[in-house]
Image 1: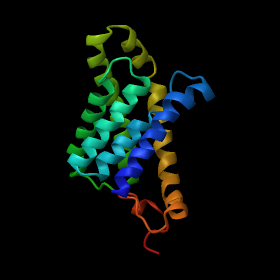
Image 2: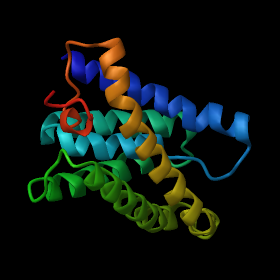
Image 3: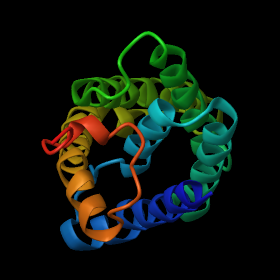
Length: 177
């Protein structure tokens, strides 16, 4: 229960960073999609039911903060989560390279799904923005995921030493010592 609550709080924090703080601090159109990175992490570590409910809440929160088409992010993030869950049984989920690969694939799938679903609501306008920002978005998502991989074990040791972050145990260089 603590882990689910922690992921919810982290999702809210990430949503605020990517929708409120990032544009004010940097002013760039392209920004890291931290919620997408968290959805990939949840897809690699959580069960289908619990993770699916978390992702629905993440999408609803993102739609409430920055969505112009209600439900769009909720559906897209849930489909990305389902895709990650489909592949998680076939790979070692505690592999850092897999998380980066899945973030890259998730970014591409997210862009394709946004183009597809947004074409029904607002043809043309959103599509051009998604295509124009795809390369910087991919780079920023990969850098964000890499930074989170480096910071998560360190933060876990400092803030909650007795708890374990699922899926990140072996990513820490101190694992097994």
